[in-house]
Image (cartoon, rainbow, N blue to C red; front, side, top):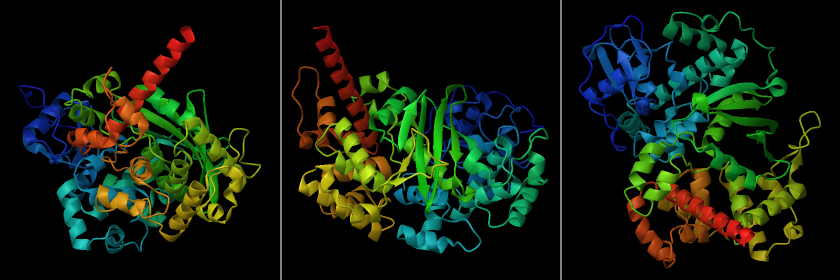
Length: 524
């Protein structure tokens, strides 16, 4: 926001915008800008007519006059309006909160597909994206305009530009690989886009002291990307959750770091994730032979670590219930961990039916040994040596060695067949009810498993496995009577549309009570 004129300060601090509103009133947006209110970072972007630049509300440059400011609900909307990204506050590093701007499930699903590259390449069409979402192109454009202030193409183009800008600034990737990783159809198009937006070639945006690594070195050396979140973030909980469920050979948690193997499109790699609390970021090291896969890998990391959640808004809503208020206060940064892969999570959910977390992890380890694939010797380590089996491998395997009841073994086979038949099996349907119905149509999948899959992988924020014993125990008042699943569902009506986060808080409360009981037993 260079060379801007100052204006008078607003009389009071702005309130957080309601989740259903696309934007607060312009005066509230301006107060957030003047006060550099970090609560609005990722929620609003300001375009300055006197410079043609758009910024985050926390930009360190002097604020522009109110009359020169235009406010947008997304970076894509600002860019589509003709503004270019600020080089000081770097919009590409803002928390990714696009899915929270609107209440449209279709928009959320569309954003997830775009993040995975659904509109990348020269031949991709909005028609194809709309078809995958089950609606018409005109309706999709209308929904994106209503909830994000920009068209699907503008959202995809902005994502490409900002991701490329982040890779230029934060990594040593050669420019050709930056273009491929960001989803540009060609290096020529990449250069043209940056020349148009920044009035300079992309290489001019990289610090002169930085020397690019050799092309094709990402698989061995790795590339480090920082993914921002809006604080607070309960990292100890997230790491303990992942550690308790880590499948031997697939995942490893040690030294405050989560690592796992990655298999995409018949290629294999790995990731490491560390917390950088001072930067409100996760530092992710990705080692993978194809840079084009970076957007998909990063989208999955965001899902696993729930980086898009606005826990302040969610917590404020849930804390209106006096039963949840003390849980929210105790763990304000609690997130709902996601699953790395839809099929993997579904199999883990079936293996975890009616057994402890430890038993479910042990069964998953047996399954990986039975039909998983080993990493090549050059890529493997003592901690990471296998990749999770494919649906085809599970469908063809003799699962009797798992020592499970026949009904659950058949459920594994049916799930594998369903995943092979429907590539979009683990994507959200039109509503939470439709998503659950689609999953329950698979033999051996009941309401609990369907809601668990919807919560962890489909990222349905309103999924709620009400029959889960941990949730029921967590919802039991001290000295009170445990509610029935039906009673809990009635209780949870006011928690919509974020029942999934209420479930996570109840699970955490149950685990805390169990730990207290075990500690007391040890003392006794």
